[in-house]
Length: 306
Image 1 (tube, rainbow, N blue to C red):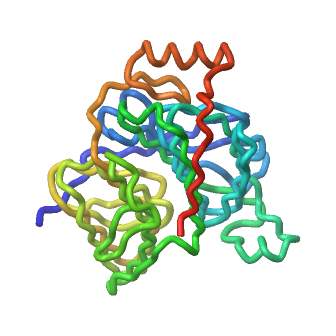
Image 2 (image 1 turned 180 degrees about the vertical axis):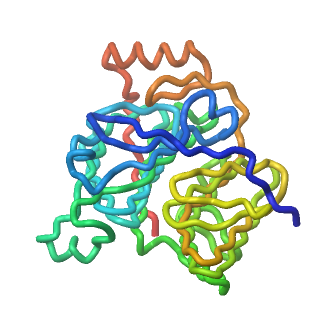
């Protein structure tokens, strides 16, 4: 079984998004999409300084994509245009298929340390709110489908140890004989793993030949194929050739996400939070926003993940 090798590194840039949230955009945009298809954007958002995130991401639309929000520290309060609302706590995931269109807002907050139930969930600094958001493109034929929300509580995400010092949370896809909390996300068939490794540990995973795959290092450091050093705050895009990814550590621990999916190889027309296939479709979307008929009266489907 041949290992994939690192073809591209994305160190990302700090930017301001939403109403003033400081985040690190690891990759994102039509140019990088030529390399990362079906993955559109990866943001590492939040801070331990409330003034850098409390303004949040107020009401904004999405169409034609999926957004996957993985809370690492603090919490994110969210609400959609149908009045549905909830809170994403540390370790929880919200996997949203925007489909034909939805308005929502996402507002990061620190854990309320005066609330005993929330205090038990605290995983970071007292004032921190940190997460990772991934945008996934969806095929032309389902871009105008009903919106779908999937809420995945941390305790419902399968987790396994590989016997070699690695602890793996399986958000979607499969690892060895275990299936993730999300069984399938359509034609892109996304695998999303959160891996923590001890010192002197080893991790390997099979990846479908031809899939786009990358890992993003949340903390620590290690090595991947060809003794390639991997470090905090950088994403490493692997070759389409090869059928496995291997990571090892020596004197450091590491935590990273590993994501893989099947490329769509479709044209895209992308502006802001809307991704379609043609400029004409994009113009229709923004015209509907102006006219107030962007929402297609398709009530979002809410799926509780057991």
